[in-house]
Length: 224
Ligand SMILES: Nc1ncnc2c1ncn2[C@@H]1O[C@H](COP(=O)(O)OP(=O)(O)OP(=O)(O)O)[C@@H](O)[C@H]1O
Image 1 (cartoon, helix red, strand yellow):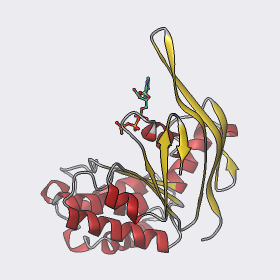
Image 2 (image 1 turned 180 degrees about the vertical axis):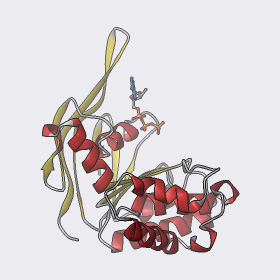
Image 3 (image 1 turned 180 degrees about the horizontal axis):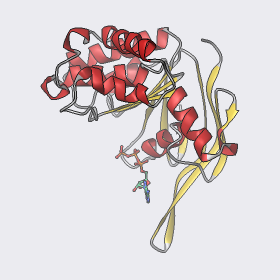
């Protein structure tokens, strides 16, 4: 995979807070190429999650343009946005968000079952995703029995089973000790090498240093 995955220009997002409005994003432009590792940093409240939600098609900017894989996302109908999000984007969160009472296999399967994939192909994809994060032998284990690092690896398998072009990871190492965090970053490296654009939101300096490029949100704009 080559080419531009994310091309956002002049993004503005404001929220109403009682009688006043807060301008959280005030003209943010960002491009991310296939295979690139980008860290977005900034103080608490700087707007990192707001930006990630827009890039993840979970929220819409008030102004500005956002092209994902060359498609103008603002002109999409709701169903087209949902389909593009499902097919093109994988999400990883600090708190893992895996279903503890379901098996590792089911956790990954749930992401795929909404996609239009044949049963035999689904089995192959799930096995490959679990294998790629070293969890194939735990396929039948309930996710609650996994360690924090394993849960995050499972979340990565779930996020990538649909072979997304963009992986958005919000503080993916936030709950992990340094060694385990390093393992998770190694996995994200492999994904970037395979051509996925990896965007990580983080306060954590080692995680930010891992990226090819670090951008900081400050006063609603990106500083390098
Ligand atoms: N839905 C909303 N309605 C009103 N204000 C909001 C909403 N979402 C976010 N905000 C405000 O926008 C600002 C930016 O929030 P955001 O969560 O994007 O920051 P952040 O950089 O991700 O912070 P943190 O590192 O603490 O998670 C904050 O002042 C927040 O209170």
